[in-house]
Image (cartoon, rainbow, N blue to C red; front, side, top):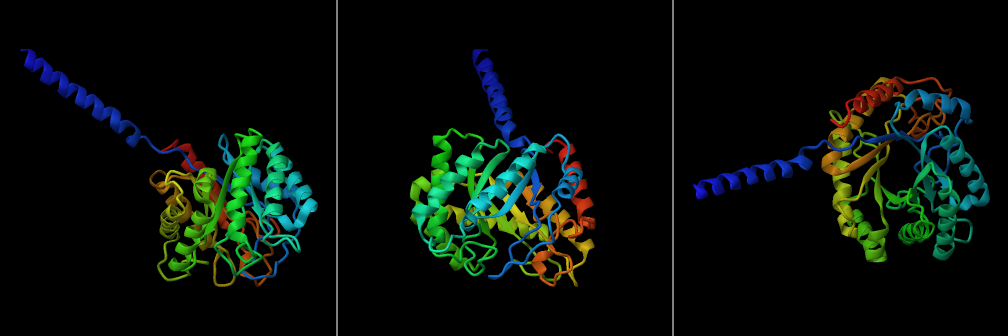
Length: 362
């Protein structure tokens, strides 16, 4: 009798343990935090910037308010804050951060390495700048993340990316460590420090790039990184346009590659991953209607993969075209045309956010 009771008890405990163990695995992952780049100015492939049609901040805020879902965070990614712009850059982006923050948005700030004249490779001056960014923007509670440098693995396009500038890899590593150190010193627990990677160069180049980050930063760099970001433009940059391309599957493939490469820099596979930029521009031969299709594929694919790949955030690039009349492809990423009239993708993104977030975490 005692043996029978012991066996029954053991089986019962095993069943309970099995159910308890299955609990976390069966639980749905958290919802993505969605957002967008609200400023129309976009980096161009190459050296020469292309100016955007003038910003009407009131109109921008009206369209953002139509887009963001109720009762959920909506994160704005402010890009093109250059070290080279000095105090003028600080003044502009502090003003924008306060304005968007007062309207109820969370803010990510892209802290570009682009150096002032004579400062390329001056890592001491650069880290002093980064620490000043942490001090000045960290006081604004809406500013919840800093992206240190931009697309350092792209070393051929100084307008869009920082890799072209001398010392960029060292600046990325030193900047991340300085930002994290300053945020700790000031006890800015709300401020998360990360960096991004553009999808992608050839595999041999990328392996060398990530190993270089690990060599330059070691364990301290790995401890300092709180998230990693992905910039991916399937059907535009990589992979290039091709018949039958599924932009959603390509985006998830990019996330998988980033996870694989990050291990070469000794970065944990548990780090939160943010899709910082993805987009699909419209211009002759690229229809506005198909932009909505590509957007829906990427949003849904990121949502489905969020648990497996620890994707926490999704940002579309961007709200408004730089100049809808321009022949340059990178002026046409917006959900709105440059005159603030909507493309079909605006309604698609708006509907997707409401549909997905209203389901809870399913």
